[in-house]
Length: 272
Image 1 (cartoon, helix red, strand yellow):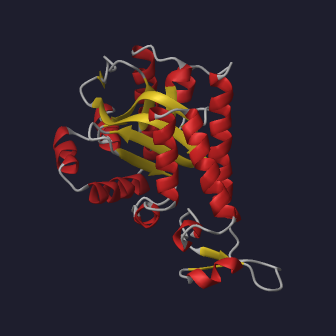
Image 2 (cartoon, rainbow, N blue to C red):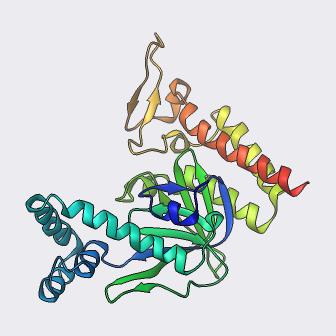
């Protein structure tokens, strides 16, 4: 069985739970690459200061050039980052079921209290970067939610597009369904969430929702058409409401079904 320390050293990890609520903090390793290089004395203080003052993209280019000159550098960097994440979990006595996600240089931890030990040595330092109330995994689309004092909800979505273009396109459509469902779970109760999503799914299947709800929630962001021969499908950027009947609507419906399955699981747990 994997320990929390084993999990922390992974480059990519997701907890087995599809839905979690609590206090989820993303702890990010500050300037991970150059911090490890300085900690290992691969670069001196002057080089460290120079690199730390560069824009992030330029700094990554510089590190990439260094790796080309020294093939061992990549391994040193990865081992150093793994050691840092292992220390974060070990020194703060984090349990394996508290780890929500592990990225290359960040660990997402579900904990009611702030971690006490964030610095390890002079240069290795983790910073609490983001705080969330809910995590939801919809077929690899990772949704992190933060409820604001104003009553609004902020969503941070991983697995779509790092430029946020996809999120902007979908924010009032498929993403709004996800956000509304999560808000109902947390604020109104599971039955209200079930009633809401049941109605949405019924209207989706009947193709009664506005056309934008049928644009696929992925990096391509296209509408999927079924040719008359039905031998294959293809995507297009735009389509009129009158052509909605020609759409293959299965992609987004699979996401809605996954969300529905999560609701039923939560309902079952609460009724025990």
